[in-house]
Image 1 (cartoon, rainbow, N blue to C red):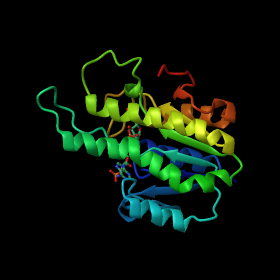
Image 2 (cartoon, rainbow, N blue to C red):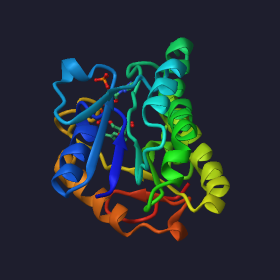
Image 3 (spheres, protein in one colour):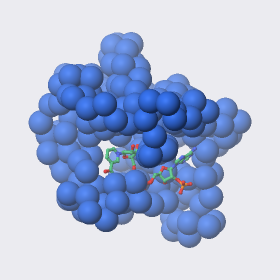
Image 4 (cartoon, protein in one colour):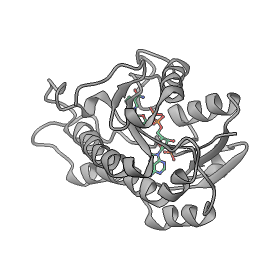
Length: 221
Ligand SMILES: NC(=O)c1ccc[n+]([C@@H]2O[C@H](COP(=O)([O-])OP(=O)(O)OC[C@H]3O[C@@H](n4cnc5c(N)ncnc54)[C@H](OP(=O)(O)O)[C@@H]3O)[C@@H](O)[C@H]2O)c1
């Protein structure tokens, strides 16, 4: 039975991944900031992805446990109504901490667990909004730049970890009906997760470093 560890598994896409992969027979290690409040069933651990202490505690708890798929999903959008003249720099730093620095911190902490597994996969949930090639818009500098930073970091990680047999890929999940995407988003959680899981099933080391739409198409950097 392959094992997946998911960050931000209490709602939205993280919860969708936990359900879909659990139904498909995976052992699911669900993590979130408050598992008791979330009422997570099964194996759940506390993890605030921005806290060095929290990440270290999880690392120690899971020492020696192979993790086939590390799913770095937790993320925030940050402020929505702002423009030049009203940028909140503290909020920007927080979004970069959650969306760009934390996934690398979690990957760094659990790399030995992934290396000890059969599948050896790290998946990072990014966004098309992090594509520099497709920006074409003057809005959302905070979220776009944080996801662009994640993309660049995972590109570097993918090169560094290939020699360990670990594949790292980035996904755009689509515009999805979650708290972040809102109720008028284009697709539901099931459609997004089904698409990404189909791609994940077929990933090999040769795919490492790809930035992939939920339907399997590559996204320009
Ligand atoms: N929905 C979309 O249209 C869309 C589009 C492109 C990319 N994405 C990306 O998809 C991922 C999932 O988003 P979503 O749509 O499912 O959003 P969501 O419903 O708002 O869920 C966000 C998740 O991230 C968790 N989280 C935030 N900060 C955290 C922290 N410091 N430590 C641990 N967990 C933390 C939240 O936990 P709490 O409940 O504790 O806050 C929650 O579980 C994100 O990376 C997002 O950027 C979403």
